[in-house]
Image 1 (cartoon, helix red, strand yellow):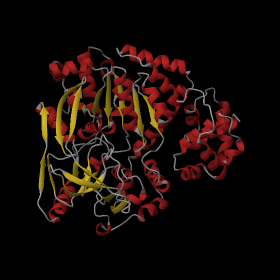
Image 2 (cartoon, one colour; image 1 turned 90 degrees about the horizontal axis):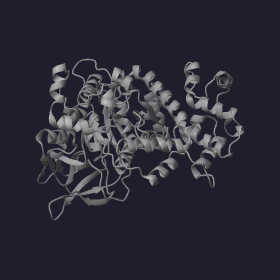
Image 3 (tube, helix red, strand yellow; image 1 turned 120 degrees about the vertical axis):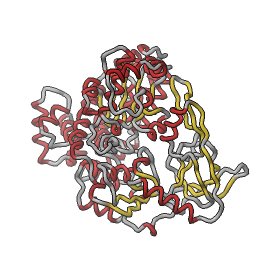
Image 4 (cartoon, helix red, strand yellow; image 1 turned 90 degrees about the vertical axis):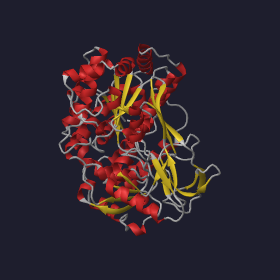
Length: 565
């Protein structure tokens, strides 16, 4: 599913689970949805499973928002006590849309506790008291933090079943454009790491001394991070300059912002220190994850940071003065708490957990002590290209994802494909009506111009004009390629995007069977063809399951496309 398709479904007001691989644009899509809601006069409640994720989206943790705090379980009396707190009751009663980021890191127990409070406050025995709930995350990344016991994922909860969210699985890739690297990440994600993928990573193995001086180092354990940052700063000559965080608002809210902020409360810097920006510049000069080196101090004492790509030392370097920035906690359109600090942290080292959600040009990664499923996958997928990875250690666990999640991920993809088909068959006017009803039901103001743009973005309108360059390139690559994977690798795209392009070409009358029939393994065509012929449904999910999951959705879509030409 594309970002535009997912955004169009989000606007209908349904409960949604927005997922996808790292770099597929989950945060970008949810931010576009938040902007649309606010433009329509609807203020969403933005939460996350962790403090770090909350700062990325300008919200608070679900624990704080729901009032459950650090509780590990709730009795009936606890629910009554929390729901009777005026600030919690007011917050939940006024809520209209609840967004929960990094849902993979939220346990089923916490998910159920927040649901219980919402039902009690809103006096409605429906999931989350009838709120529209948007869940965002990827279960193949980092799991919930557990205290020495097995922790169930949120999707195992009966509340998830009752919520019955529509699956929107983003399949395009925006962070990585390196086909070999994408192949490695896809193999890890699917549990099919083979010798060729080990070879790709082996070429990036290096000794710490031979790694780029200023690239951040990712470790699995906090102790390694603290030790290295302190040691590297101590090596530099010159005087330490100290920058302290300031804050406004209620202590408990401020504490939550501090825990989630990647900039430390006390930031110590020296000239020559390697740093990483922890927030996006409003002027576009840097983003969260941009690397740099302190080259001096401005007239006001603020650090002057030289930035540029660590993976390309010859690239032109820009110098910017790092000014203090603010992290805010907004609720019902008002700022409840804020902290102010330089948007910097020492970049010598950080944990894999703290890197989740970031994009980096380069990173030195030590996975020799990886201990969690998904830890290596998250660390590697932070970096944009294979050439930016400097791998100093790797153990067997680092390239594993939870095997129990592989089948669940396939189910998520199947459900998303079914949803994509359902909404793609809907008339633009019907979709427009659904979206308008949602806005009106929540007391918002419908924006006709925005809805027209939405219909255009979601691809529900007629396609006119000359063949777009992206489609022309895919058509030529399909004609020249021997396999679908080969075409995807040449174009630097994922398989589903290539198939989507071919489907668009067919709609435009610019595709013949000869253009792409060779991309489908001959041994699979007859079986898929028979399953399509015998199916009484136009949807792919029943066919996928009827074939026992032996063939991918992309293969089924290609055979279906052949049948229509």
